[in-house]
Image (cartoon, rainbow over all chains, first blue to last red; front, side, top):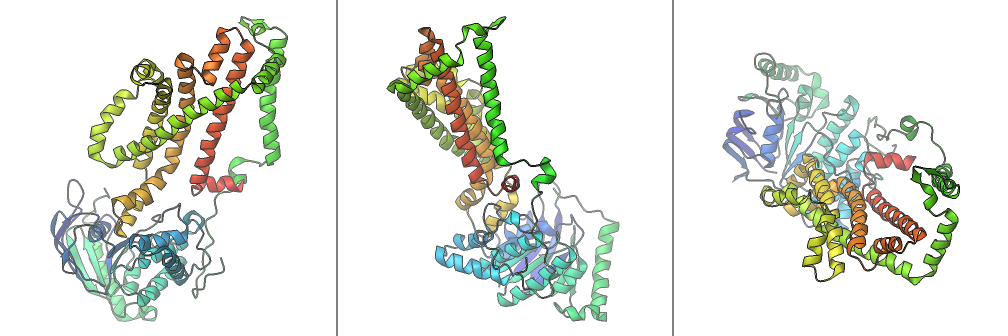
Length: 253
Length: 288
């Protein structure tokens, strides 16, 4: 587990910044949700935390160290198609272990263990193309966690799934995170998903964090109808609204 | 998909590739396909036999060409002589050496140019200037600079195959989705790991299309080079047959080149299929 901090962070590709003035302090072990309309820099922020995109201005810290590049400590989970299609499910999960220098026989055992944990025992030898979207995301989750990262950065990981599969994946995420704790930054455009999974929800806009909401009863499905949750939901939606109407977000580069 | 145990999960079935039936119309059995293929060749031979045996002259003088019977006789002589096998072996050694070198160097240069801006600036102008020169136009230079004929011919074969492999590799590497590289880098993978685990396997489909084209061009050039400067080899023998007015020999030589080219192209194709089984199109073919 590791703390992640952004101070006065400005990010962008060539040309105008995508997002600027971001101040965030993510606690070690926290499940931190980031909501925002598409094109408002959610993915960009995550790429910066992963070390794939250097900041244009401001500081970005992982623990006490400034983020200077990619690291096995900060793994990124993508929306779809991030598995290597020529590797079987098992060999995909073995990849981060190989990078960490785990010996071959141990790699195999650990990969099988992880696949079983995400409910894919018996599917080890399948290629990603032979798996459904939900199963591929399970493999990706197993692959990410097998590398034992201290922070997991998830970029709308369930965004491409149907409602039922998505709900199952949300439960799975809660389950496996209890077993192997890590700081999780979870980007989503779905307010309910953010409220279900996050300890806190940040609403991101191109000019920084618009609101930061503490989630009452995080990860408690039964508390979903509670009035304080409804209040938090309204607050997040209110924070999202001006972004949607007054200030159209930049298209993705 | 009943092995999943998560409570309350209505787990979806795995995505199945579109079946051949839907995409390719009615399927027909494999033996019939082979029959059609063999029939196609047989029809061509029959047609040849007819125009040559009936001494057809339609402006094009088919009557000058040997009939199938004469060709069979000539092929028999060839098969009985050791020379024929020596020539085939010699040509195969030349083409396989040149092609193997071109594969290694072509893929390496293609990856280098696609992955490194500095190397691209250094090498790309050279490649672009040399590429338009037909490999066969290098014969004079090859004769001048290489101590033996053999090396010259291998060099020409190499040059012929090098450029299609280089260009295909460069494009294939450029087309590898960046998400795979990002994923491996955020697992802590460095440049070499990305190269070995993402770039090379991910570009294989494109690389193999370059290898196929390269193999074809290699044959053109090895035969031409042998005709100009060889003292062995199937190309040299074919030209030799012409100069001694042995027309059946010329045609047997041509047919031999055809069969050898077909076999080597088939080998490249087969290797390519094996290396890219993961492609969605390959999965569909396996179902057929």
